[in-house]
Length: 150
Image (cartoon, rainbow, N blue to C red; front, side):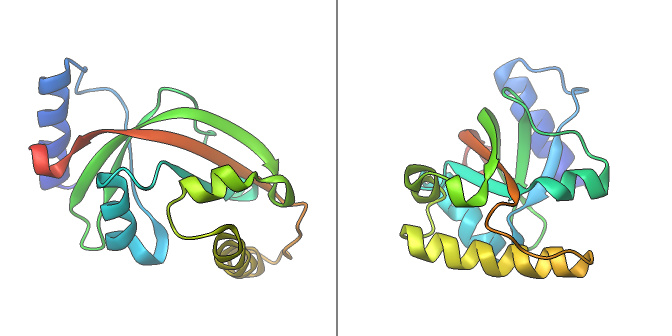
């Protein structure tokens, strides 16, 4: 965590009576980090999904309800703090349309095409192939703090 992000986190913790030593994930949303961070701040993006296999490759714990995360923009600057409100693991072909729309990036077909392309590239880079049955980790979240507030 860089100095600016650490200050942002400490400001959030102070204003919301959260222990600053609490572990927090810091990340950006893929290739369109600025656009997606803005959608989070506008309340238009309240969900995201990732490949289940990625957690296995990285040996990372799965997200859980209540987890806090710092969303970064493309420059690596903090944009928002989000809180995970729901986590579900499901085959990609069973992701509900309502969830895809909550990602805030267009209609269901746009969501499907973008995610298939992204997951296909990700899986191929790890020597694996894309399947509609691949498991995805679907997370719903709420923005609890914005860089505009700090």
